[in-house]
Length: 155
Image (cartoon, one colour):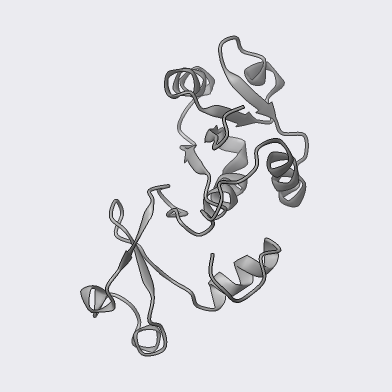
């Protein structure tokens, strides 16, 4: 498996895809892709396919991980055991579209976040692809805690 794996995730693992992006994995997810399209994409881009479908996982010419559990925590544990997360990459990707996030000057996003956030936050990240803005509010701390990364501190 590649050192910093690039992933493609099948339609039945949408929650897993979101959490893998939070952890910093380059994770493609599109629930409209059927099995042949997933296999072609994995092959063409050298991505590891994550699936619960045994038949899909056994296709020739692709690297695949057959995800064993229906439960998100167990799915994450399996992927983390098989593919270590990218160093220092947690919270570095857009959870919606997978693009890398960029740190931006606070002034450049004025008027684009709620007033309370503007007044209480200093650091912002922007997804240039879809325009979403991220900051280290309570949601960020809750996610860090759930992932076992602690609630405070740098990534």
